[in-house]
Amino acid sequence: MNVNQVWAVYWSATGNTKTLVCAAAKRLAEELQCPVKELDFTLPAAREKSLEFSAEDMVVIGTPTYAGKLPNKILPYVQESIKGEHTPAMAIVTFGNRSYDNSLAELCTTLNQNGFHTISAGAFACRHAFTDRLAFGHPDKSDLGQAEELAAKTAEKLSKAEKLPELVAVPGDAAAPYYVPKGTDGQPAKFLKAKPKADMEKCTGCGICAKVCPMGSINLLDISDVPGICIKCQACIRSCPEHARYFDDPAFLSHVAMLEQNFTEPKENQVFV
Image (cartoon, rainbow, N blue to C red):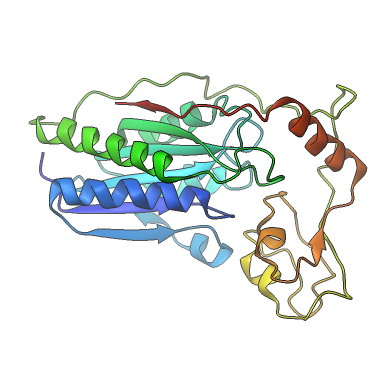
């Protein structure tokens, strides 16, 4: 098959998904001897337009796993606004060392329904957005190496094919419900309405937290005000140079504690070609 352009396409609130997608896309471009470009749809402004790709493109697309599936507030954009035309694709999901559950199946299914032809895929364990105690330091050199190896095998699969290769098979059920977060008591932890607080004694008013919010939910003129939806991505907390943002919702904190009690054992990445 002839590929003229590789695209790294991602939603990445805290940067881990971006790192892996870009590593894979760069290696693919090297193997296929064509240029690579990035398309980041993390921020609201980037989701104001649709993304369309041709049969001569190769797309590496990634998102993190939220409650075992794709982030529910981002999924509609992926379903409605990212389109291919017999476009070969590699699907990548990241997960915070608990499980990727059905997120990879959902991403592959969505892509295939949107005109893509998903020929390879990978799920990578990365530092959990909520806590450094789960997969801290990941993605590391080894993870990037696995992403690059997946890209090399994908390029080989493409180069040997006269037409689009067979679709990749991945585990999971795209139609399965979201995972229900639990607290340390084993009961469902209900924190959908929880929002990040601001320690105004530490805050310098830089506005970084508002600028990186993927939902545009923080008031740039008063960062203590969060009038919009919070999807708990932790972008504001991870980006604050003064460590002035935090969550104090009891149910959320109980869920984090449960994760730390049960899911610190390192999980292995899984790749499919």
